[in-house]
Image (cartoon, rainbow, N blue to C red; front, side, top):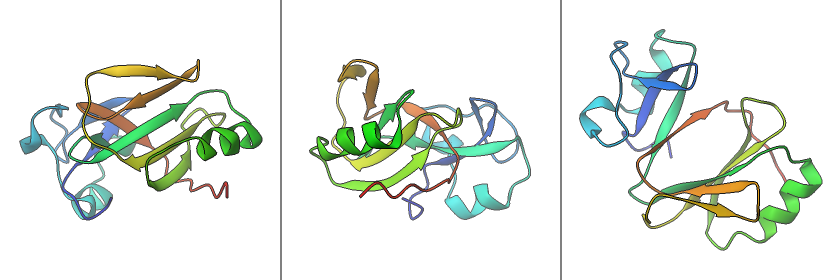
Length: 128
């Protein structure tokens, strides 16, 4: 995922450019390569814009066992799994074609595949 220019800095859950201007989920000119985002001191974190083959499942309020079960049901190729900002959720990044909007998946879990910003922690999980 770090090989694409789909990264932004964050102020809370709001995406911003490496210079601090607002970033847009649909305007690629506001995104940057991972290296530029990683070296910027703007904001209090970073995240990725979804689309162009990258999607994410946002699993809220799950134990590691629940996350493992849900992960086993995900049909797409999993790229990266991390603990979410809340500490009790999981983000599962997958290879996925773009689809319309947001859809619920398995109740309290959401799946996004385009025009969406996901604030990341980098706290990698191994749920295999």
